[in-house]
Amino acid sequence: MHDRFISKLIAKKTGSYLRLSLVLFLLSLLLLVSSFIFMMYQYRQVQKDFVDNSNTHLIEITSSYDVADPTRYIPLSYSDVTNVKALLTEHFPDRAQSFVVYTINFGIKAENDAVYFIRGTDAFSLKKLGLPDLIDNQALSAAGTEAKRIVLNIPVVQIEDGGYRSSETAAYPLTLIPYTSNLLMLEDLKKHKDTLYVNETTFQKIFEIALQMPWDEVVERYDRGEDVASQLVNKIFVYVDQLSDVKRVASLLEDHGYDLRYTLGAFDDLSRSINAQYWFMGVLLLLIYIITTINVVMSFRGYLRSMQKDMGILLHYGYTHQRVYRIYRHVIVHPFVVLFLILGLYTFVVSILFLSDTFFIDAPLAIVFLFLLIGIVMFMVLRILRRITEQDILYLLKASKEME
Amino acid sequence: MIILDKATKTIGGRTILDRVDFTFEAHGRYVIYGPSGIGKTTLLNLIAGYDTLSGGCIVVQEGAQIQYLFQESLLFSNLSVEENMRIKWLSRKQAEDDGNTFQNRIRAALATFFSHVDGILSQKIYTLSGGERRRVELAQVVLSTPDILLLDEPTANLDPENKIHMIRMIGEAFPKTTHIIVSHDDHSFFEGYRHLKLREGTLVDA
Image (cartoon, rainbow over all chains, first blue to last red; front, side):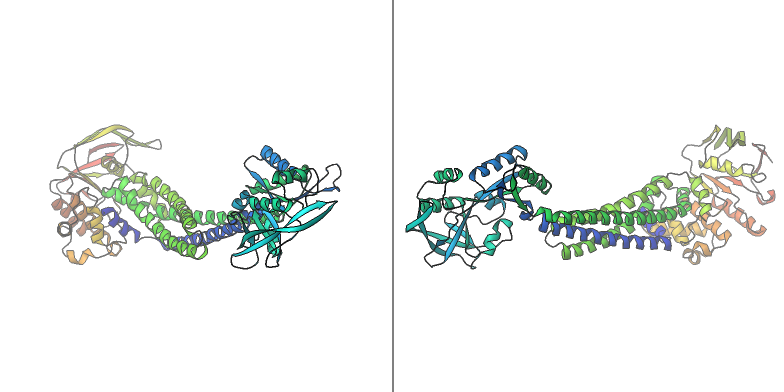
């Protein structure tokens, strides 16, 4: 308590140059913290728009081609589904997964006279891409804004002499769930209001009704190249967990004769320029920090050296070296605490404004960053203080003459 | 009692004190003379423990409280007399700071050297004359009730009348204290003091 009182008396002697240095330090920290928060804001945006965007993780396999003759287009077959799965399991186990979008080529008329085109996808894609959890006999539809019930009249198809004939229909009720998405996989849902997405089980049921044969037989015939009234495997998608793997997965698939479409390539340059920007800003801010740190540390060093005689007087009065250190530590720590409080409040307010979505993660991070910036400088100044207060009394009393 | 036993001090190859043997008796009063640069202040620094010996030893009575006044003023010039007194007072490990105790003690200490204590308390040190500063320092020493008092040129820059006055005040303020004073002043100012001379690194009677 006595030491704090003495610290207050001694703090009266703080020079205007030191105060100016502290103000400059405050301003540069304001700049650094603002830039840090802005970078965090930008990082979160990029995460949202780019890294966490499912489209960037998706590779669409549209068809395959003969590796010996790349101009020969081959439609996707069910064996491609197995082949792609095997490739991914071998080269990217647990890092990339494939799923299929099935399609029926012809439209199916409903009782309300509208014609719908059915797509089917499996449970994995629904879960991984954050789509609504479709139960059996439900369908995603971009038309309308409210769930509604329809009844499909599924034509019972007979394939004869390369043509199709249908003389009867089977009623099949479906509940339409309104849904729109920017997902690459669902682009036809967005473009064509008559497209419906159902889960794999529902799709199989519809197909079994239409062709009057079990699903396994449909798949078998399809892969033998027989006409099953549809290009059953419309598209195969590959979901890659890490963006850094996307290009490698794509190369692997291309090497095995698959035509691909994926969006990461378009983002690649953006990613590079964002990274370059981060580096540039990071280096610039680091330089600002180093320069202002040197300035404020040198100012404190000058201040402490000018205080050598006073430290010597305290020792002369009977204070121990440790007490002299404590007294001047109070003098030094106080302005840093004030700086931290001012900047902490500023960080808090700016974080609320710019990082509201991730406030509870980013604001503490920014405060810790600030604490480190101030802490490093304070640590350096306290080290200088320790070195000075450990000098013997005669040195402190006499060496100070050079400062006078 | 302070015993110098072959006390030797060498600085940069130059011998300042050369195996000095001497005993300062308890409650004794000593003035050390000698030309500038002969090592008088070094001797006081060594006795005060501010400097280390190159050889020999100095034995000071166990538990003895030493107070040392430098030739130059060692006060916080931007602070008031009262604040300086308080800082000195709080240097004691068990310093009471309940207001009354402190106020009574500093008033009593200052009253030893100043006729108007109230007028001096709030004055900043930089407004005081050299003699007044010296008296404030002596008042600080009174707070510590020393057994041994080391004074380096306590009467420097004072006129003869004030020199006599200052030496008398010191004698009255510290009656049971061992005084060791370094001075260039005439012997006649220091009545009742043993006069010593530092010559060629040894301490002899003047």
